[in-house]
Structure formats: C-alpha cells, structure tokens
Image (cartoon, rainbow, N blue to C red; front, side, top):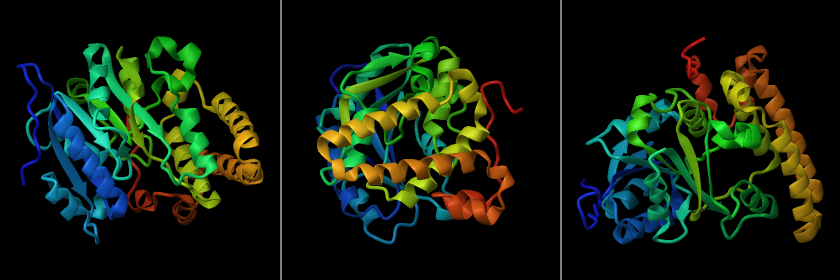
Length: 331
C-alpha cells in the first residue's frame, strides 16, 4: 500500500523515509500513528512512512494501513534492533534522510518532525535526535530520567567535544532520531546484530569520521517507561553487554561512570523536591542498574541460560552473537 506523501513547495524538498518497528502496539500506537499522519500533512518534506511489523497479534498493522503507511512483515525470531532497521533503510528508493521512531513515542506537535529535519541544514550533521518528554502517566523516576537526559537546550557535538561531554557527545536515541542517508550508507548503517544502543554505535562511528550529532530540543516526542526494579536490572545488563562488546566507544569517548554519579545526585535532588517518598525506590533501582551493568560487562563468563534470564532482549541470545566491527573494522 502506498505511503502518505506530502510534497513541499520548491524543488529542494528533502526525501524522507520514516521507519517504525512495531509489535502489538496497542493504544499508544494509535496515538503515535495519528501524530505521524498529522506531522506528514503539516510538514514540508516528502515523507514515506514504513512500518516494520513483527507479527502483531492485535490491530497494529491495520492501524498503519488505515493511515496509508506501507507495512512490511518481519519474522519476530529474526528481529534485531540494528538489522531490522538496516533492512528498512534499504527498501524502496533512496531517501535523503532516514527517520526512526518507536511505536510508543508520540510526536508532541505536528511540527516536531520538521524541527528535527532542520538540523540537516548544517551539512556537517549526520545524526539528529529529538527531545523526549515523559508520558502523562510517568512516575517520578521516569519523569526525572527524561528531564536529565533531554534538557531544554539544543546542542551540536562531535569528536572534538569528547573532552567536555565524554560519552554524551555521541548519545542518540532511535525513539526519535534521523540520519543523513549518504553517511548512513557510507558507514554501513547499524550493526546487523545489536542487543541495544545501535543508535550510539552509529553516532560514535559518525563522530570519529568527522561528522556531527545534533540534539534538537524543540523537536519533541512523548516517550517514557515506568520500569520496575527487575526491568531496570535487565535493561542495564543489556547495556553492559553492548558496552563490553563495543569497548572502542568507551576508549574513544570515555565511560559513563561520571555521568552515572551525576544522574544519581540529580535524581535524589529531584525526588527530594517533588516526590520524597520515592527515594527508597530510587535507591533500589540504582543498585539493580549497577548490578545489571556489572554482570553485563562480564557476560562471557556467564552460562547462556543465565544471560537469557538476565536480559531484557532474550531473543538476542538465540543465535551466536556477532560482534559488530568498530570504526577500524573487526579486531
């Protein structure tokens, strides 16, 4: 089925492919799809919307089709955060810009997409990501996480900023991010097998290749998760696995230790002001995050059954993990 297309006035309108991986999106996907359609209608770029659906048992694919989005099926057993997005990037005519959105990230205004795309007016920008605001039902921990990680001020960073920003220089989030397709193709896209953080992987490679990463604070989505303590453990186990396999990122840009301490102090101050009864819960969450991350860093020493049990993305362990190459190629 043809995707919606909005042709801007003038000959230089960017060709954009907006890609959303989905699986059983539920009610939040209905809001997400409606917001995408509104943004495409209001925007100036020529946008094709492609939904990569992993055998949803609900009406996720139907919602997409009713909005005129193109829907492609993905075998759930074959889904991968990097590989599936790479596949979507290769479908159809080559765009100028690739935009990735998750099914639970709702564009905050019809102009959010255009706002993100404006970052590419700077020819040096290869990656742009938008601000994430908490959903209306976010608990205090989730609300603080969005406030801390997605401030109100935009910035543009590259490898030259690593001494000041550290690993934050190459932070990006595919919940709402865009990539210059020429650079994406040149650098080989995301790793074909990635447990998490395929966005940071590419941003780091782009920065080391001389490109810039833009954070666009006035292009926002509503996106947050009310994770429980064990979910945080599993999420940070997966982050530890990624950071262990892609150690070149920490070697090039520094680790997240200092940022982690700053986060905890910021969270405690935030909770003391807004929700002091949540402080014990925050301490539990942070302890389990640290434990999960430490175990993820040591995952080669763990039995496969333990890795699956500790992981949020258990299907990752169903096939042999192929370590993606760093910027200098395989070790």
